[in-house]
Length: 135
Image 1: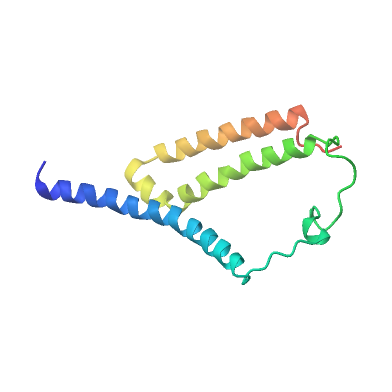
Image 2 (image 1 turned 120 degrees about the vertical axis):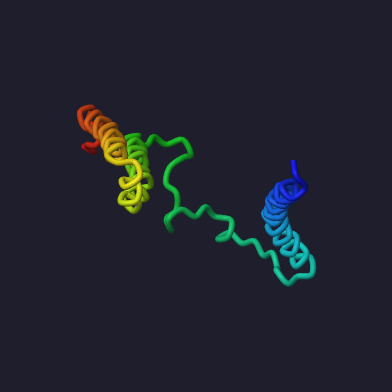
């Protein structure tokens, strides 16, 4: 390899190393500074009963730790996430449809039709199984 290509190659890995060092160094530094400030009482630690209580939506917890819950909520939430991810793929496609269709033709439209078709089949399956009904 020519010397210039190797220089650029190692420069890219150097940039990744700098970002990795920042990703580890900044949170570690913040935790270290917080710990040092607590030693000199700039950040006092005064635990009270209110600070140690469990906080969940502003209400005290009712019941024990092992209470039964309705699983349908989690099933519906998972279905929402699955179908919501569709937008992540659909929006960039719609935004660049003109440029892609000029280059690839009808193939771009057929690929998205197949993608939406698979999602519709999944939606119909969930609807048929009653996963979208709460009661």
